[in-house]
Image (cartoon, rainbow, N blue to C red; front, side):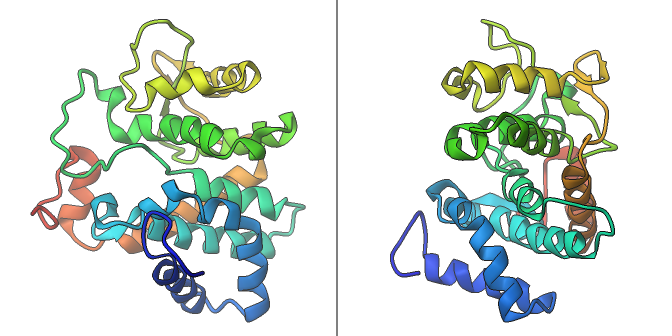
Length: 245
């Protein structure tokens, strides 16, 4: 774990171990889980989101949030009475919130409500993940399970839908990344983000158990990380006075 990859990797690995201890994972379980997620964990963009500029829920950084989500997802999969692909579920968790720029106190105004962080970030995370972790999306079946889980993890809240266009109508912070997608994955993104479409949003849960388990884990963790009224109000306003510099 020596060296730097967008931050202090050894220190960040200690954060992983801290949350493993918090949830009582055995040595075998924490090694098994880390083996599944390490290719994403060591990516420079994931490491960068351990930084203080990426405060996600209150003072909890984005990568800390994702790590805790992933551990809870792993535990829920182990408890599931139904057959579930644990590796796909935890990879959905590792990718689900990898949006492009910090969302709290960024002072950027959006022209429409549906373009704000809460609606748009699953779409950004899906696009970023397909570009940063190409090997994870080589298989069409696995790609659909991963993307469906990422896009619809906020259910019952909707997600901004993607429709192919030459114009930057979506105002995504990573709109230029779309041209880096393969035609197959671009078509899959359009298909899955337009399910049960109402206007500019898609309102449905994931079709796959892996995505639904991850969505449940996200809600369980998020409730614990929102520590004050400012943290909760920030989900609507984007402004968090408790962490404003």
